[in-house]
Image (cartoon, rainbow, N blue to C red; front, side):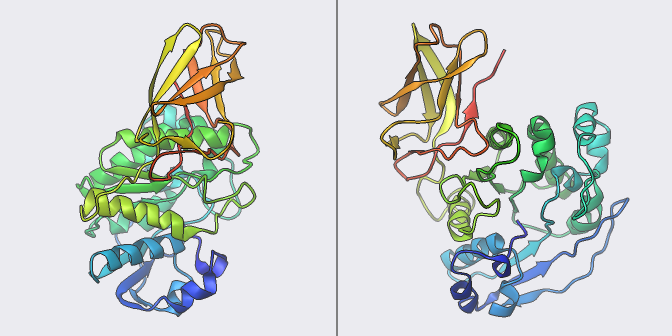
Length: 346
């Protein structure tokens, strides 16, 4: 979320030169920690210029620019409260973690790092709590890479953060977020576990998720194409919040599956026009009652995917793109990619 044009993005020089928008204003929250919630923070609003844009969150800038232009020049204020490389725990109120044994257990798995805090609540207290009295339209979130060490806790952590922030503001505001990019996180599956947790968080109201899997590579943990990601997030806002556009803003999302003999059929939401960019559909795996997954042969049929494997006589579970580095190539009619997923295990 913190990544700026000065750090390297697609067409950085061109974008900087064109960043003259007097009605877009930036506020950058300084990196600080505190042991208890603070009331005040220092800083000033800046006009969007080539000089100020290059050091501001690139994703936030492009999102704000898209909203500003689509709404015929309505003024847009962007507050950037982010800290690269920090785990989600530091952005949660400390009591939310310490009062929950499961979340406290997850937090205990985090190791100290030299570039930022890792203790629960430390960034929230200094960088988020002072903003609670400020009226906001919504939140953009791009984080998760630093939680691979305790990936299985992320769903509950993320759900708790969204719920708690909304409670603090007393506002069920939109919360739109980016799914983390495919990258070698050091463990074979942990990246997929985080992405799946983010997919499941869409069960909360007024949320939207933009995938990065097709606009990134597995080499750079900071994908350079912030414009495409911001476009997906701003389209979600324009359709779901501002309601001035009518188009598909979500890729195919796993719904459920059925079985018939050795065939497992996967159903998706947002699956109209389902197609694969590769000659062979990759990344689908199925398992029987032993929970051992095998690569599956896949066929698209009526916007569903039929799966089978000679090694699984009675499939009971399915997963898709279950690798940290997987780049799914299954798309819908809006050319938006399918999120990784795993069906519920025994």
